[in-house]
Image 1 (cartoon, rainbow, N blue to C red):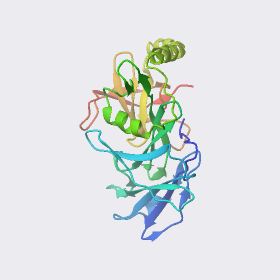
Image 2: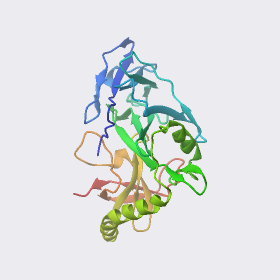
Image 3: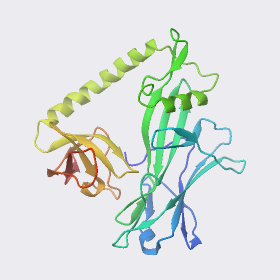
Image 4: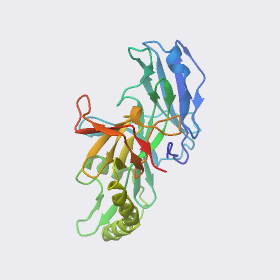
Length: 282
């Protein structure tokens, strides 16, 4: 899906091009316009605004992370009718005069707590592809908190080891009335998820045996690339190498794709291969 939706949250982009232009309300296709590159100068910027409708909505918060994954709650503003998070994003101009933004300073990250101990992490980005700008909303992670009676504490199996900072952060956002399920429920949740994924996994495995075929492991709108799994490799895919019938070039996790070739990627990266000429199947 090109653009996710967070209940109670809207997205606006406002340009600062010497003068403040009217905000652009982002709709389902997350398109902002092409005129950015035509009018942008070196010191121009955009304001990515995320208004949250209800001032009583404490379940959604904005946060930042550093290189060590440490988390800090981001301050908000509001007018009594809701909460507002803003991110000022510098617009860069490349050697061809095309305007663009740069990761990791091109996005806002939100954490949403849902009754029962569920946690969702969302990313709202401002990105440019060939001078056309988009502000897509993407759910990047989801997890669930449980009560471990034996250990006498709240646990989050999804992130306890890989990202303990988000676990502590999420614990502080849990409501007192949240009724957390016992940790024993985690195994049955996993079994149910594996059961639902089994049919899709069988289909993907069969497809991987076909030449120049893979499926999407993950995609990041903010970074402009993702990863696909082939039979023998995991390869990076940059948005410039994606061909699909949509203004925004993107891939969706689980999607089956065909590619024309693999090459050695340029620049510093952990990927040993990069797929080119990528097109979703079906």
